[in-house]
Amino acid sequence: MAEITDQVIEFYNELFERIFFKPFVEKLAERRRRDAVRFQILEAAGAASQSLERFIVSQRLTASQVNCVLSGLQAMSSHLSIEHIANPNVLPEEVVNDLLNLPACSPVVIAVTTAQQQAVFRVALHSVVQALMQIGPVMAEWQNIGFPSTFELSRRVVAPERDQCPVGRTRQGRVRSRRRTLRATVSRLLVPALLPR
Image (cartoon, rainbow, N blue to C red; front, side, top):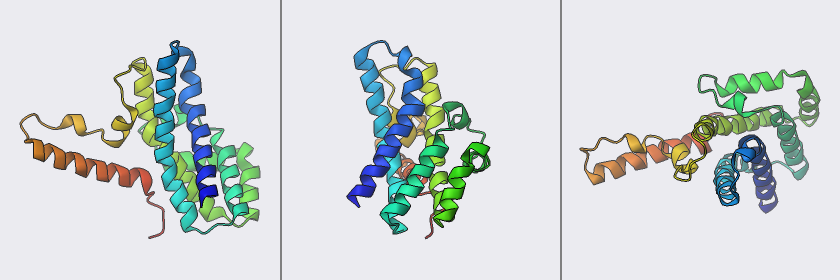
């Protein structure tokens, strides 16, 4: 299990850095600011990795099957950019279908089919794309406003409705509302709809 955890976290760290950090590193001239942004991105990657890790563990895959799925995900995700995932009007299923139909991705599809992991791979790919599309619009917003130090990525992704609480509500009502929002968002982020129940 620890080996799977390491592999999944490494995959997500590389993916999030490539999509959300490296394209914008030139805009972050100050080292401390750059490190703070990178830290928040890696924190989001760690949270997103939990869903895929739980899914892989629940499928009881062998080490070679895990390697096959993760290497396929890595190859597929190399075709993604923030432009693909920052549009809130596009569904994750559309992005997954586009990736699976890319001619450059056909070797991955063949390898996964040979390993008889098509269903597992498709659900894993959907999980990855869904996590990216949760964070993509928030990252685009953060980039558009110049990566201010007061911006907290995790708060924007996990509890986007927090700041929308009416002023007249009691403190206890706001806390209950935040908890409900947090539970709903965590469920969306960490438990993909396609997981078997």
